[in-house]
Amino acid sequence: MAGSLGSRTVTERTLVLVKPDGVARGLVGEVISRLEAKGLRLVAAELRTLPREVAEQHYGEHRDKPFFPSLVEFITGGPLVALVVEGPRAIEAFRALAGATDPVKAGPGTIRGDLALEVQRNIVHGSDSPESAAREIGLFFPALT
Ligand code: UDP
Image 1 (cartoon, rainbow, N blue to C red):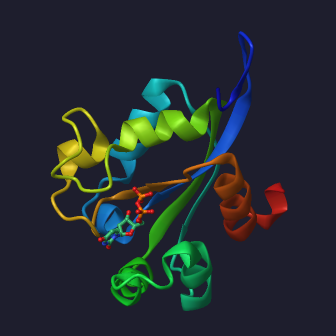
Image 2: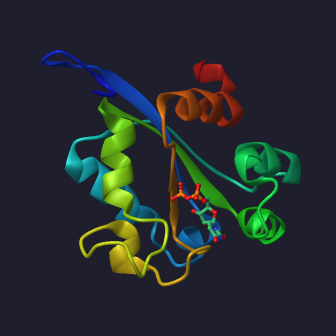
């Protein structure tokens, strides 16, 4: 199983973003409260506005999708909060806290399910695999890698 070796769970790091909609709506504390309450730990945190090139690299896997230009506009359109979060199975744990990409389909009790309505403006990002986490942490916080 990803993130575990037998019965011993491996500590992982994941990149979490509170996207510009979450910052504008004053939900940074809410997101951090939820992940800390779960038992995940902050390793790095920074408010910043992304340059276009960083946004395009971050979302590179979506480069050919029709929503890519508007996604880049959105994610560069205001300050976001970038976090590195650590804990047992942190990647999967945060994805579970975030809920499904489409907030209308995300379950109640999840960040997106409780707090958002639109697919693009879905408040948070969380890395989706160990490979993505390593790449994204390297992009946002090179000093940590
Ligand atoms: N997104 C969008 N339109 C879509 C699908 C996705 O604007 O039709 C945005 C949305 O903000 C999403 C991000 O693109 O969080 C990345 O999409 P992905 O499928 O990787 O979802 P995630 O991993 O964020 O749940």
